[in-house]
Image (cartoon, rainbow, N blue to C red; front, side, top):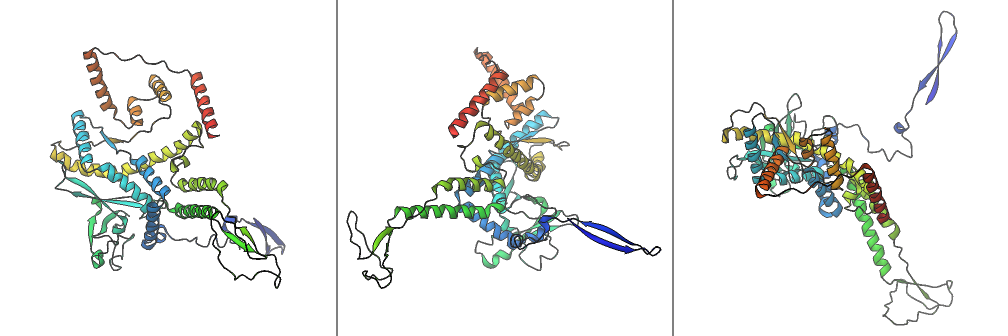
Length: 481
């Protein structure tokens, strides 16, 4: 912050008035010799100008390379896809007609299994992580073993492009044409992949209406039209991780090898046997070797950074996984340094991120698929016109670390009317109506066979819960130590 004097003479009195003008400064906005190189790449480009086709192609290629060759990168991307999609979403219709709801739910799940919807969704989530975006085309597949012939075809981001500079005029984003309101009108899909070696055939493309294309990506900036890899900030870190690992291995190999350096303390022109510089000498195992006169051997000592290796890998993996809101123990598949409380705390942030991802998938992908499926299903199954297509999606639930405590907490919430069966079953990714019908069948059959259910175990008291948590934390801390 600085003060600048401002002077002004009055025309009537001739008195000079001095005013102090305050101008504030931001340290981060200053360019100094120390930070000039660090901020050299900062620019004021728009979201689409910064993510040009060339930039996105380079990022995709590098991200795919890391995922293909780095075990941690592959594991992180696979874990993310498995946690977000799991075994696939399950549909529950909420219309007023119960029979219609059951028919739609049953037939949709059969259709989803026929096209392997869960597998395609996992592939789309992996593509979003390494390519930045995922594309799928809705089309009619006459060979599909299902009454509804709707199918889903996945397209790599490389194939969504406008091949000609002449055609790209008026196209806001490469491969996508928008209307005056910013809504996609059509997509340009290359008939062959640019990396397939098809040559001139790669310039041929189809104009596909936007109603038939699903484009799943995360928009980080207003007006962004194409996606960037989720692991983009971690790409340099993956390279550093592999370089450090190779350096440690090289140091270990050097330490394991016998390397001897011959040196002499005899001054230049002194009495010492003449030895040609850089001469190599072969040593035989278990043999005593006499060195030339005036020379003495010394073994090269290779330092092995064993004490910092684990620490470095832990910190860099933690930084890599942070851009995905993934805790270290999930990214590394290693919870040896965690206790019970810290593990649950880290997982809460991760699972919240997973719920956000699933909600985005429902809005962008699943609802579009369901609408297209219902448009054909109402004709195939003679459902009539659906005035209300209210529905919700269920995903795989997350297992609790202590099922007994979770069951007691669930019973308490139900007894105090602070939750519902629908909510509790939804936590497990189950449809409460389906589960209750199944339970009613089981109870009726048990009554018919003369079987009785085992008495419910008494719930733990709050004091017992607290003692159990403390004992569990103590055990975890001792194991970590």
